[in-house]
Length: 123
Image 1: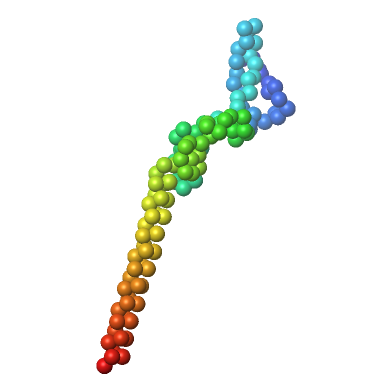
Image 2: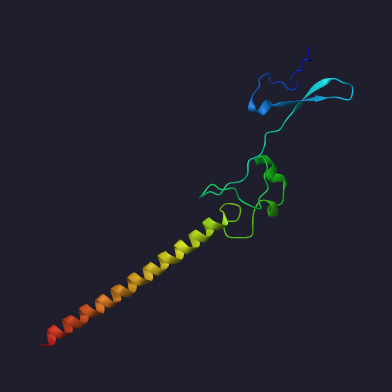
């Protein structure tokens, strides 16, 4: 019959945080080794794709590593992916262009109104 093993910590249930791996010691005994949870990759806040160049760790471990492992050298680096940043820049540029076009059209309209009012007042 197979040898029985017991948990080494106080939690007696098979939960996500209490997973074990069965390991055989050099003495031939089977013991439980507690396995840490697998870290998930950091995701882009807009599209949800995994961010390249950022360390994959459990949340608390980010406190122990340097800033260069947590970000990339770009606007929104470590928070948004390159494609989403590019979209934001283009969107902001197009909105500004649209504002300029509106302003120019309004100025032209005002000029036409003034010109038409001058012509009618001269007659």
